[in-house]
Image (cartoon, rainbow, N blue to C red):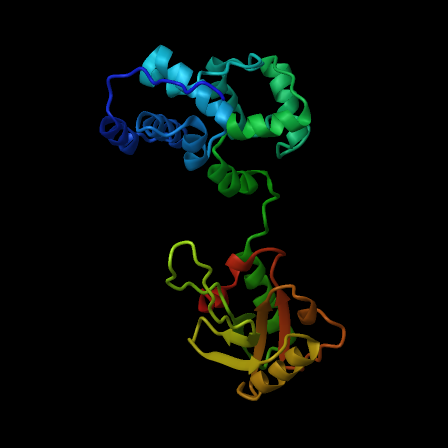
Amino acid sequence: MPRQLTVHTDLTPEDLARIAKKELNPRVRQRLLAIRLVIMGNTVPQAAKTVGLKQRQSRNWIHRFNAEGLDGLRDRPRPGQPAKLPRQKEHAFRERIVKGAGKKDPTRNLRVKDIRRILREEFGADYCLGVHISCYTDWAFPLWFLALVIPRQICRPRPSLKKTLRESIQRTQKLHPDKKISLWFQDEGRFGQQGTITRVWALKGKRAYAPKQTDFEWVYVFGAVCPATGQTHGCLISFADTSAMNGYIQDFLKHIPADEHVLMTLDRAGWHRSKALRIAENLTLLFLPAYSPELNPVELLWW
């Protein structure tokens, strides 16, 4: 039978409980509670099982606590391999990346291999590609900043939508000089219902049962808006494909005066560019740049 460990401390179980309650580190709190249980008369296996530790871990932490006190319950720093890029150079590296590509760089936008080359040539730190990407995330920007800002800096600049719209309206006006040109924006949104996880009250330790709706039904809203006049048009359709788009265009054009020509701006969905799509004489389609829903004002209807 293993010898029962003894905790050498002047702290009472109430003192340890109060310290554990104020402790922010969950691992340290877990070790404190295990030691508290041992002081209260539980065996090490019982205390370890209660707080979710292994017996060997619990014994090691008790030895550390007896030797060093509360400070012994904290993880010791792990230095690891020394960094190739000194910490005093991290700020300079961050500023270099924010500055972007220079005259000596082969491209206008910095790629991963370009950043690796900058690290090697300008800062004397040669990293492999995988390590470089993780280090770049830590050094240059936090994760949220990387997701929001870096794509805008390294992606190719999109052509000005205002300039494209102006040119398209002028070109359409020349092709239809006897018509009034109206600019519309069109899009589709899917609205549906799907059952979520059901929560019920139940006795602790008892399995709870609750009914859940597993059906999933949806409907598509085809909508268009004219920002100049505030006019809107919409249809509810149970699916989205070329035939649905043809039906929507047919119903939409019924509300357009005969002396008016519509320039409809829309995204690049497959049914918008299908060869089977029937385009009327008083309708011209203008497609937005790819992956740019923020340029379509009708998207505000779905938010």
